Length: 142
Image (cartoon, rainbow, N blue to C red; front, top):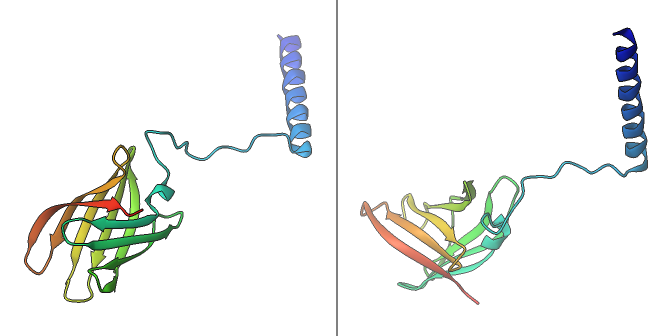
């Protein structure tokens, strides 16, 4: 049994030396981040100008940081800032949440999901002042 331990120790030591040499030469592969597949689009797909065809309301997404915070604006057609604008993942789905507090919107929100098959944002607009919910769709403006 002691000879088996010595052999196992020698093999382990050899593997560690080889791994150290590979790291020193820069040939080791860095751990990959979460894989993004066709079923799970990258957050960058959300960047663009999105128009709600039933009224001409526009959401413009200029960028997204690693935490999902959106650099985004709203126009009705007057430009308004979002109080909150963020994207997140729910499984393979890309979810967006926007809150408006300026211009008489008083906490109105959009809760949207990106539909990759149709390249649309679909979801619910909550009009806080009237306390009403509406199904909405935003189309990408070319």
